[in-house]
Image (tube, rainbow, N blue to C red; front, side, top):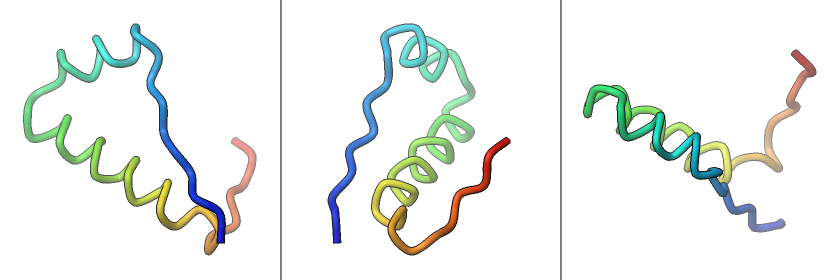
Length: 46
């Protein structure tokens, strides 16, 4: 099982900081979940 890291570019980090604290926390939690579980899901193209 591979280990993945999410890296935000500076503009994305600034946008994340501008979000409401509750929403920003949810986004960060979802990104961490995605990094931990990427091997177990089948991403589809948008």
